[in-house]
Image (cartoon, rainbow, N blue to C red; front, side):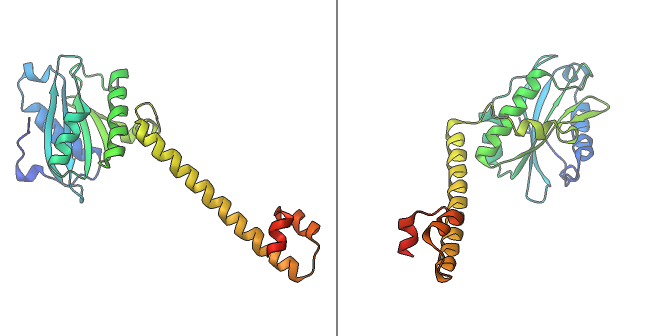
Length: 207
């Protein structure tokens, strides 16, 4: 469900305080019964970090809400968001991330890398204060997890690593060839050239 925003609410997000100032107002619009349910929102940002939209993805119970990556990223892609911020409230007032909260964030982070719509923060809010995954360092820690990396992404990363190693090996080979040529000009023996370049006698003779 799209959250109605006034033009003055479409601010440029500089830090987590900016996110909370908007999300606190949205939460407090609801009556007490509504605020006692857990909400999960996504905030879509433009290139300049200005808010494009805020979407309520899930409205749950007092202790949980269900979040599906397909719903999160379908909104992001349809509405041309360049970056995303996740937000949800804890009606209990305890702002520490739950195991489920960290798991959902981890999953969405990995999907965001594949779809190239990065998640830059996840904040947990109450009526008076908030917790930021980015500020606490938890977002960075989760981004290094491989738990939800797809098989396709893992294969892509593996091939990139192979390419990097092969590139390094090719560079080392070129250096060895140049050294061997220089040593041949100085009339060094094949055995001596092999010792310093690790090239084969056949490769050295061809130079």
